[in-house]
Structure formats: C-alpha cells, structure tokens
Length: 161
Image (tube, rainbow, N blue to C red; front, side, top):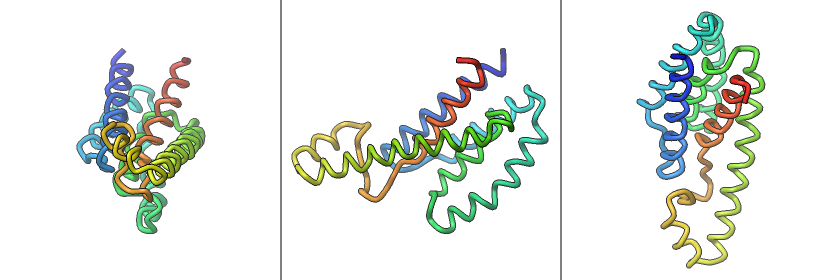
C-alpha cells in the first residue's frame, strides 16, 4: 500500500517537473531529490535496492557525458537518474525506450509550435498566453516532459494497467 502511495507522489512530482520544464525550461533540484527519495523507497519495497543503486552509479557517467556534450540539460540528467529506481531493473531498457519515444513526440510538438509561430506572429502571441504551449526558445525541447511520460507509462505497465 505504501509503495503505491510513493508511486503516486512521485507521479505527481513528475507531472510538476514536466510543467515547470514546459513553462520555464527548469527542473527543480528539490523535485528531483524528492523523486529520488520516493524511488528509493519503492525499490526497497520491491527488494531491489542494491541492484537499483548499482544501476544508478553505473549509468551516472553516461548521463554526465551527455550533459557535458550538451545533449541533455542538467535537470534532465538529474531527473533521469532519480527515476531509475522507480521501475524494476528488468524494465530499464523499456523505460529508456519509452522516454525516447515520448521525446520524439515532444520534439515534434515543439517543431510544429515553432513553425506555426514563425508563420503567424499573432498566432505566436496567442500561444504565449497559453501555459502549455509557451516556448522559451525554438531550439529548446522540454525533455522533462518526455521523461515524465516515459516513467508514467512504465509504472502504469508495472502495476498491470
């Protein structure tokens, strides 16, 4: 029961992080830290704590390198590392695949909004009044949204939904 409450709280924080990433292109450290604490609790409840922490430690240099080369933002890296213990270790590849597919969808949405806003400046002004479609830069993709979508898909799949 407590495991599902922790999953619900982590899901809420993931949605919050996605919204702040859309609006301000920022993922708060406190949200990532809380998600990590909740994911540790979930992995302990499953009995996979040690394996999950080894996975996080082994994956850290890979994501750090992606941050160094500006492929991912710092908030995205922290969020990905924080959510790894939320899913069973056997579903880790599936998690990354879900995040990647969601990332393609988010990037396409950003391209469409950018193209539409460049075609019509009045359309751009109306889009900026809508919180969900507010785009800070045409070259920026709120990848926190993709991370949240991928994790939510995997945790729902893990729960049998």
